[in-house]
Length: 355
Ligand code: P6P
Image 1: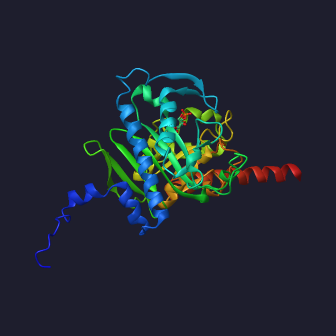
Image 2: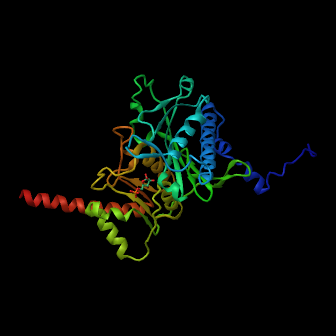
Image 3: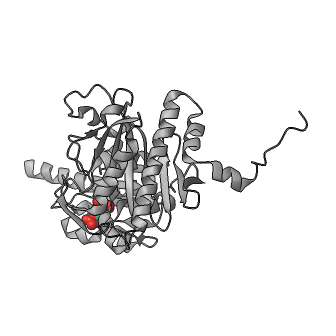
């Protein structure tokens, strides 16, 4: 048909504006199967959560009840900020009546939350940190949401969610939403790492970057040096090294998602090692480190607890913490080399004392 209408979708801006998150997921899966449709719809719900939280954060300065503490403590014994509670409830709400997610596990809830009407059909669990870095909110600095999608295996009759206590390799997708000067959603379902920017005029997350690759090495090292006195000697050795060699620059915002995002894009390393007060580290394995490790590996980077790939660590309980070193493969390897060196010294010392 010679006179058939030819849509001018080759026009870059129109095609870009139509590459929404849900369409992108289907493109990545190259399938319209029911599972692909489920994942597409699930990601769309996460995008809705991001929009709602982003809108609330933008009102934080002018709306009563947004800033400050909620007067309660979470399972970590941390004072809960009002935004933590709001964001946690947003993720639950967007999945009500969705038939997608049966169970949600969050930093803010001691046990997983079930959405009964979804459970017969929805075999997915969302594991998430609704607002990470909430102490930054009152200073109008960036915060983020972190999420991972896992299949719900077994009936979980006793509600112990023991099926969640499996390695990060059981994740079928992961991502984060960074609430900064713009709101960015970064995700992967195993086919690379892709980033979307929220266009408030459209109310849509629009494709910004596809197949993000972390540089093999970078200049950034991101760590809270105020903990130097609490670190193992190996980490101190690494910090002494970057202090004495040209080409390194310290960047640390105090909010994991923003610090991670910078390393993902520019290269380098983020680390939160174990400390005297928190030998297992501060960051949580299931809903902070494992999702970010999934993304970093998808982008060609690495994530380690110092001796083991984070994705291979099996969580002992929902809120388990872990030391976390992630970023460019060469920079993660450099940190690990100092840990290995100290381990060798300790072994030699033990051999000497035995002989
Ligand atoms: P510190 C925020 O409280 C958080 O959980 C992460 O977002 C961040 O990376 C880390 O803790 C900051 O901890 O001890 O450096 O203030």
